[in-house]
Length: 275
Ligand SMILES: C[S@@+](CC[C@H](N)C(=O)[O-])C[C@H]1O[C@@H](n2cnc3c(N)ncnc32)[C@H](O)[C@@H]1O
Image (cartoon, rainbow, N blue to C red):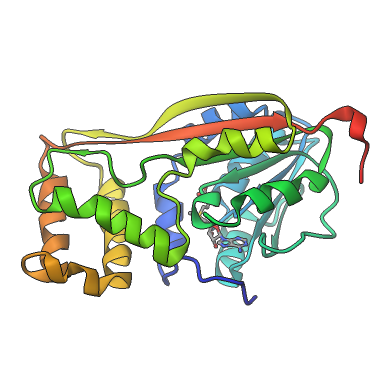
């Protein structure tokens, strides 16, 4: 499926990266807060390799069901193979930047780590999702804030360069380093009711890093530096040295890294009917 813009993190290891970094207990906790429970019909929009979809499925089963939707044919095929093939779970290919049709109505729409890739279109995407919700259904938006910027004690010049790098990535790739803090306003502007917000720690890394965190962070920066190679002219030794310096920083157990996760949910009002 051709989509309107390229996905920043695209790589032939993306399904694997997402599968590896998805923490089952953390997703469960987030989904419980979002009100996911037995019997509901849930849409996992931008479902990646389907691991989150399977977790949501385990929470709505046996009477409920989940649809995982993603524009990537490769990730949908992976999802079908690794997490599909059971009653109540299906995967479909769709582009969320266009009107989504033919999926029916949902009790919960779960959009995790997706709006951060659509800084300009996010308000419009949120607006359109309303018509996929049952009246009384909840739209749940989950994203990071201060993405990639919560590290101590980074050596100079990395410390100065990283915020500049993120703002260039935002500009060049329509990414949103500060997606999390905007979620509440998106729902507020669309007159969602009973809006609630929660803050959790996504990364909270100190001491020895887990292998999955090392892989995820190095992969994130490898993709970022690969896309912004010329940007590293001002870094002594260039992009390769930057990556090597980050690796050293990250493997040092003195390092502290955190990223806030913001969860925001709002209800589609009952009295507006189904349009
Ligand atoms: C960072 S992953 C998040 C995966 C999953 N939601 C999670 O919480 O782990 C973002 C996903 O959004 C998908 N995506 C990007 N652009 C999209 C679009 N236009 N329509 C649908 N999905 C899209 C990507 O293919 C990718 O799988």
